Amino acid sequence: MTEWNTDLIRRYGDQGPRYTSYPTALQFHEEVTADDYWQALEHGNLARRPLSLYLHIPFCQHVCYYCACNRVVTADTRRADEYLKRLLRELSMKAERVDSQRPVLQMHWGGGTPTYLSDAQMTELVYHTARQFHLLEDDRADYSVEIDPRTVTQSRIGLLRGLGFNRASLGVQDLDPRVQEAVNRVQPYSMIEDVFGWLRDFGYRSINTDLIYGLPWQSETSLARTVEQLLALRPERISLYNYAHLPARFKVQRQISEQTLPSADEKLRMFSRAGEMLESAGYLLIGMDHFALPTDALAQAQQSGTLHRNFQGYTLHGDADLLGFGTSAISALGTFYGQNQKSIEEWQSDIDDNHLPLERGCLLTLDDQIRRDLITTLLCQMEIDLEALSQRWNIDARQYFGPELMQMNRLVQDGLVEFDWKVLRLTAIGRLLARAVAMIFDAYQKDGLKRHYSRII
Image (cartoon, helix red, strand yellow):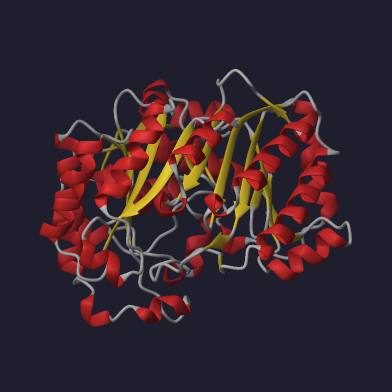
């Protein structure tokens, strides 16, 4: 069980990256080229690495006031028609350079709200993807879709299952009617319960739900009621995110009155109590703010040492090249990261001109690769075997990371890590604050970039 030490959480829960990549997106730049992208893709062909596909569908019918995503809120479905045409062309453009034998072990539709698309549009998108890439038809792969409970019906859940999706992610956020009203996302518990029932009936093998703490009118007691209701539905995975109120960066958040937001101490109590409730109900803390049932593949991957982390968060397929499609989508190809144009207009223009819609990215140095290995392993396995790291990279890890390892004495004294100069292991409380430990090994954090990130807790 995790030790929910509020004093340590308060001391170390400062701002920090989520490390869905290393280096993080703040280190991306515009000097990368289409040739860099195509060369990285060809290296993946030669290595015969499997594929992971991410398709970004940015449209929503309603605006959620807490949202910080790259999305378009519109009731004009013609916008989606035009977007889909270009998305199909981007799929074809990149597929031309991919070895057709490389299997797609993972596919994820995110947004926005992918279920904004019509049944016909979703069917067309899956069929086109299957014509361009080697999708697996025996249900062995992990094909997931983000679902807005307000935009699906029983028949649509069945259609998505028939199209090959076997995992679903639901944005629950909070079940208190007052909170839902304040963030403009009204979805009663009965609606969530219906969607869960349909997903179970159609045989989805994993359901993930997102919860957010720190929303307007939330309290420790109200969030506990939400968690209690959600536990009755028994999702395989639960993510418990901290709401970052940044109205200067995200204009829609100005709709939220700061007077209605819980205090920092209240947020800490909310997170601690919710985490304790999840663990008492049998969920395992995978890391940071992610919980999973012991029977879920995510928990099993952590036990077997195969859990990985990329731009989609925790994943089972760390050996796969990630290809991103759609505006702002990120590709991770070996030692290359590339992000598509964030502006829909610029992304569409590039596609119309038959250009790769690449805006920025980075090529990893050898030091980047070594540090990425350490940070990813720490966040996934909660420990670092320094001897194994030395062998993988032909270095003396204790010497290479000498200055960073000297800082571990303070963390040992505070109870975050156990360290014997052979293995660095996170303690129960250290798992919650893994991002703070990882930041010590981040060469770019010396530039004082913490203010660009949300709080760890």
